[in-house]
Length: 55
Image (cartoon, rainbow, N blue to C red; front, side):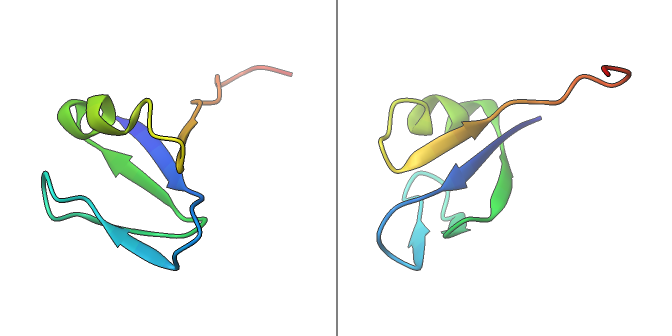
């Protein structure tokens, strides 16, 4: 599952596509459909998954 972080100016926003709420600075897991909608939005940052076992 992919994760995004909202980093806009408002304390909280709602995604009209699904009604999911995003609080500023909090990681949220999103579906592929939501991910596609938020991928190029300037207020959302994509969280890269950390590889296990990496030193």
